[in-house]
Image: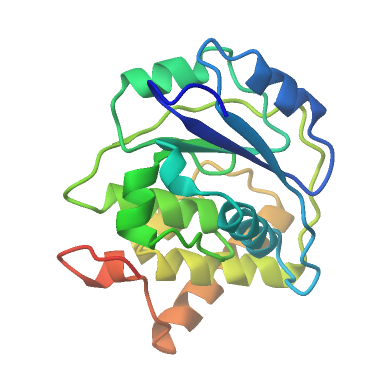
Length: 224
């Protein structure tokens, strides 16, 4: 590992496929990472991509001494980072910088406070991280959008859209915002059908009393 002075960044690339261009973009960072880990263990027992990604992250982080680092950089394997992503993210002095589905730079201290060093395994695992920090009165979030490099089209089972709606409820996205999120979508029958499934999933979770994360139900955010 590199010098212990300054930021010490553990970078984890989550990928179930190729990740060469992602790694190249990480190696070109103007502020280099301290250690690079590839989280690509498949975990076939999990049906959904988000759950497999979350489990791969949990597995990779469990093998590291996180107290040796100041930050965790999570990068999707189809993402090419701007060469100054880490440098500019550190300048923001935020506890979490980035966007779910692409890349996130999280301080280890906040990961310890909110998650007790245990990465969430969820259909929307990266969004769980974002929402926990956003809803905390004690932590700062900064969005930094990066563009994925020509990601391959992903095929999702029909049930994944219902799971998407359930996940929105669990992380505290309101029914109104869930519906409004469809307003800019193309009006094709297929997209409309997916939107209906998401709403069905949201309502099913709400009516069944599905347990929400503590950062949704508690005024004072605690780890869960």
